[in-house]
Image: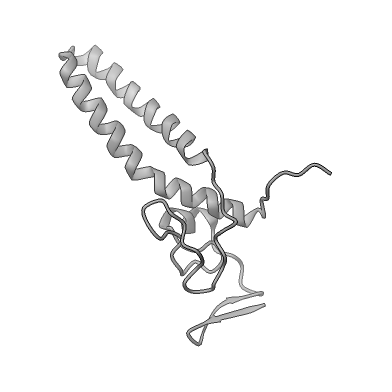
Length: 132
C-alpha cells in the first residue's frame, strides 16, 4: 500500500510504522509520523492532514487522566513531604507550591500522554471489546 500526499510518498508497505512513543509524544500521526493528531489542545483532528488517516476511531478514554493523576500526585506528594521534613514551611507555602506544580505538570503532560495512548491504540489495532 502506497500513500501519497501532495505528490510525495509518505507511506509505503515496505516502510515500517513510526514508533508510537515518538509520534504520540510529538502529537503526530501514528501511521505516517508527519500529520498533526490534534486540532486543539486535547481535541483529535478529524483526520491526518498528510495521509488522511481517520482519527474518529481513536478513544483514549480516561487513560490519560489516570496516568496524569498517578504521576503528578506522586511527584507533588513526595515534594510536599520532603519540603515539610526539610524546611517546615507554613501551610500557604505548601498550597502555593503544590497547587502550582499540580496544575502546571498536569497541563504539561496530558496532551503527550493522550497522543501516546492513541498511537499505541493504532499500532496494536485495539478495538472496543465485543461479546460474541
